[in-house]
Image (cartoon, rainbow, N blue to C red; front, side, top):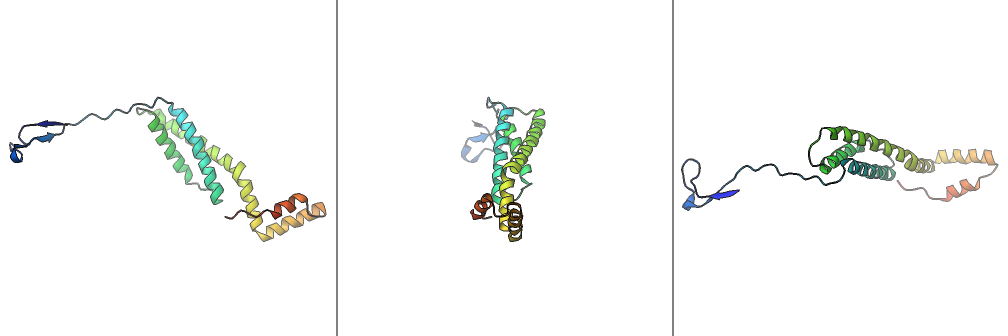
Length: 158
């Protein structure tokens, strides 16, 4: 931006012959790369997003499939911000990292959250709990100590 003392377009002078601002188009600001690896930033972001997705499923007791769209978008933004210049291969890298993150999140959900969710659902359903007690009675001729301890623990509130 520079200030000049020349007439406005069309030959008219500004009020009181005041300087006016002549805005020159500037070049795009250069985005400097952060110096880190976009792939490493994507992997770290993917692991964090998978853990956040696991916690979301753990708290809600429901699989939230829409989270995959958010994971893909956030990984794409992470890769775009971590590199200084646009690169056509970033799309492929972002898609691959998204697929890996979704698979990691699904495995974490099945291994970590699903067993506890199943136990909570069984404890909340009186017919299922009665059936589990009956099966345990038939097998052990009495209630097993493990089942007695499990029954005394309160079920997590949903």
